[in-house]
Image 1 (cartoon, rainbow, N blue to C red):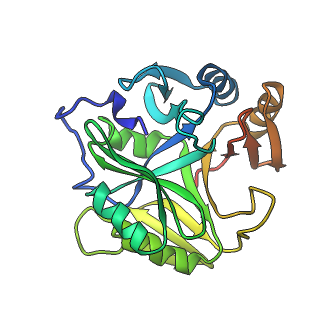
Image 2: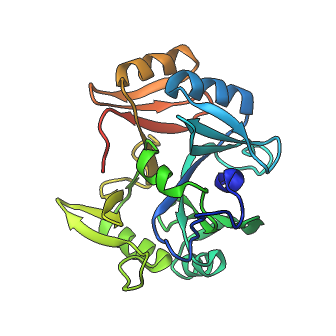
Length: 267
């Protein structure tokens, strides 16, 4: 949620959610222990850390100097679940939150003002959590789009139904410049922004499943050079490996947040 912390309001080349919208624009992790979380992800993914402008509870992760993700140590303070969450760009956070409520979603936090913008944390009809952001994007947003080793995939009950829900909230498949295109490919819903695949939605999740990897959720994928090395580092630093193959592994950090490391870029 602290993705604006490295941007300069009104700065040169600033991109806002009024000109680019509907696409994932950030990924953020809620955590209980900021220092432990930083240590884990630095060991597993090699991230460096930048203190944000929001205060001591927030940090921005850097890869080769590019901001790629945020950590907010607010899980205990705000009584939130520990999880990785994608944030989607919207022209109006208040309007998007209202649309979500009207369509059976829930608003967990916000919309709240976080200058230079507004943010909210929502859940869709099947319980998958996601965020929305209105305002300026990180100052070098195009660099984030191209360099950020992140990709998001929604595991949900019914991909077609979910695509309609998100499409109506996030203005997918509109004729307005800056929006996203939606395609149906090989049983998946594929979201494209400016030609790049930025998200996928797949069916098959079970709402009542005891296994969190099977319940509806947004999964954040990070591209890495060595999946096996990341998995071993996760185990060594208090995390666990839920699923592992040569090209991909689903990991859980010491706080319980799950994420995927993959050897191939999804775009």
